[in-house]
Image (cartoon, rainbow, N blue to C red; front, side):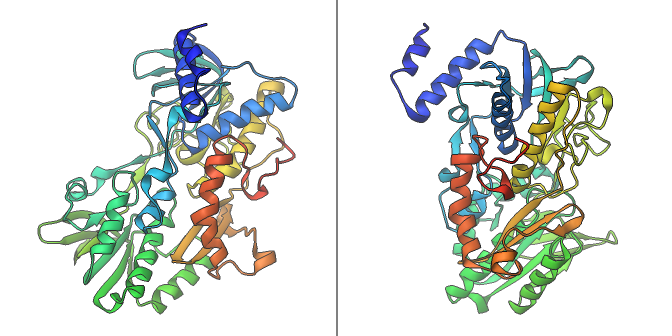
Length: 450
């Protein structure tokens, strides 16, 4: 037995899991073919890797330890919804980060490399180090790209501690959000949202509502003007929730401009420039500027054989299997996929068991199962300290509410939903979801098709 494996016996807990992961990486460094290859160890990748292994085991056809491999070179795994809580002063950012290697169970192999190229015709990928890895089935769960350079002056503004510019969309900048909100005594506070696809499209206004509430509670409300500059045509994609949020905005005296995209920041003169729908621009003075940067597909996926014309992995919206028959052993979920629904962790909780069942069925019988994804996603939309509007919907932006039968219309802001977001969901994530034991609206119970 190797010294590394002997060392595993002398430690317990996360340290032991990390040591085991390192040992498995060393032993896997010469293995070039896997039953299931998962690209990305974020929320989707870890969840589905564990569910796939468990599904084969439940069917009495267990995979061998190491048959499922996850490729990701990151050092840490993040619970990204926690960054809004950090910006609102409800937690420390270190509460929402874990060493990635510590999250892998012994039967899932972790290879600390990233993918450079896809070769679906030979069922293989090439890593950034030049290594070729082959697979029977491929799951792409790589996330999306945040284009910090897409707004002129944004990277420099975020790096300047006195700029008043911040963003909840990264681990490195979410603490600056809290600092800037707390430090503001008077002036103009502007919160932005770009047009197009972003992670959790409710998040840009979550932090705005929390800032508004903080200013009211601290007696600064009359001295600070808040505006929501939104590249989209309305407050939210689902009309029912959008109407309720817009009414709340008006009630609270928050200004708004729609179809206004932030294109540049002038920190020296405290000006933000927005491009309007007609192509003209307008400048706005700011004291505090919270920025949601534009986002899009990852470069190594965009232009690859498995991507659609926009750069997302092109999968069937119901089965999550690639739409091209010749790539029938490829699946995708989460932010990198072409699924026409909001990109949230809540969506992944419903996508993962569907993908798992269909992948298992394809590997076992050559055909997909009857399991279909209906587009379910959710945005726990903080509207203040002690209140939250729990938006839930499916394809077509049709509400699909889990609690309305018991609690009534979910446009009503409730304290219990606030504690879901603040306390329950982070616990569920670390204790159940990344281990493949959480199934979204079905709660902790295993769906009938898993």
